[in-house]
Image 1 (cartoon, helix red, strand yellow):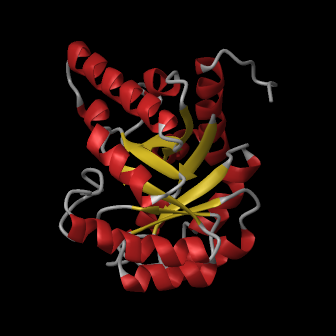
Image 2: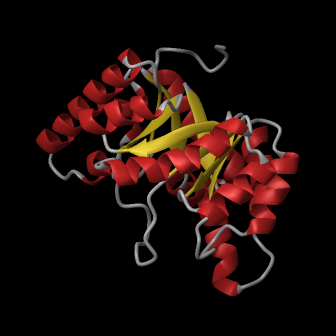
Length: 248
């Protein structure tokens, strides 16, 4: 299983003071040194945290893989095709949300056509495209029909579930979606709201090959340092699949 670390909230701290530190590009170096498989950043239309400068420097300096999250909007597609990160994950975006609240709405031909207009130029530029979707059959089947190689399952409802019964239901839902995605030929990723306390049930779902985790790691880094926080998460994920710390 791959761990991609989302460093958006390093930029959030920087933007709180409108200064030049902490620098998310320097954070990416530490994340990679700690053993993460990739870096994820969300360049939002309102530029509330990550800035164009950050993405440009990350595209030039990332030694692992850069996963750029963007809305399916012409300006964002233009930036992505210019910078050519390894992967682009198309996500829904609303200006008044604190963080992404759910998967893409794939209902209706008009929405699908809008996504096709985003997917095609990205694919033509040699960029791997993933869609951020809810763990539902309809969303997975629509994703496969769009011809993307990967999807990222939204784990927010699992993360927000309060009772153990509700959590179990959401894990079952994620497992069924992951198995269906794999059957449809999609690479299955997952993320949103995952923490050191709740990640293991998701990490144990065999078809899921990549997790995107950010806020919890950046939060722990305040106390443990960024490299230590990444290594702690990697150790959890290795244990979830029954592998030791030195396993390949």
